[in-house]
Amino acid sequence: MSVASPAAKLVQLHDHVDAGDGVLQMRHSEDGFELPEDGVLTLERGGKHVMFMGLTQPFRAGETVPLTLTFEEAGEITVEVPVDLERTEAEGHDHGGHSGHSGHSGHSTSD
Ligand SMILES: [Cu+2]
Image (tube, rainbow, N blue to C red; front, side):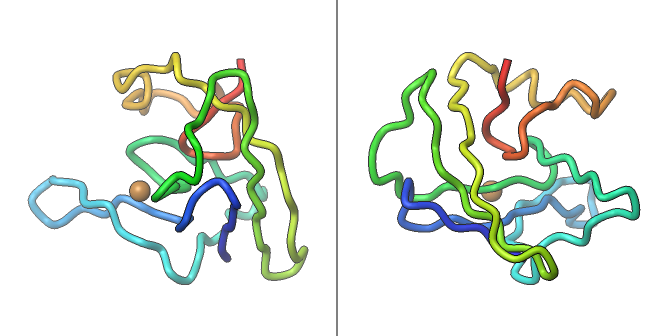
């Protein structure tokens, strides 16, 4: 339903929606994300993601960022998201498969 983190002034769930002409626009999903029946929702660049705005301190590779996810039924779950500064923009545009994404935050993955 929502996300929060002390790592940024504002943390939001964002999605990309087709503006109608094939151009994807980023949008704040104020009501959160609907979980699919199998319970697995992949967050990734170019799709649903967690947006950190106004970082309270620089993200450093190898460190983790605390992120609290609020679920409708499960309540609050805090995870440590690994910072990956090595990943390039191009990799984020891989829509071929979802299995390659191990992280639960759109902006960071582990390994
Ligand atoms: Cu965003």
